[in-house]
Length: 173
Image (cartoon, rainbow, N blue to C red; front, top):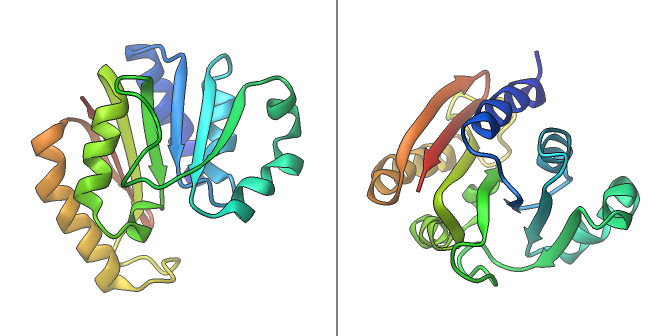
């Protein structure tokens, strides 16, 4: 089983609890999370945000169909200062992207702000034991410690699991 398969299960379970019309993917990267989101939330508008313009420009090829259908909206921006109104998104997700953020607390506050009431947050990060993490175990430990401290202040935990090299957290606003 791949991480994508696990995420399909997580997102599908969450979709049953709360149908979502608009999602936000923080940290487009190579689009791994986008492929899962477009499959599970097949009628939702998916907004994907990245500070790296090159990450957004690669979507033109790999997500051409979704872009043409108006299902995917790439936006240049920063997780610590989201360029969206309050309460817009039913789901905010961040797949292996929060470790790039200087102020994780600020990013979580921003995710909380743009989430609709009862909206869902999904965060996936590497575990300290991960062999895939190019940033090393100390970075992963820092992110996990910050999540443990900050998430309960803003969210209610819905699901927490470790799958191979990844910590997967789902929480409700």
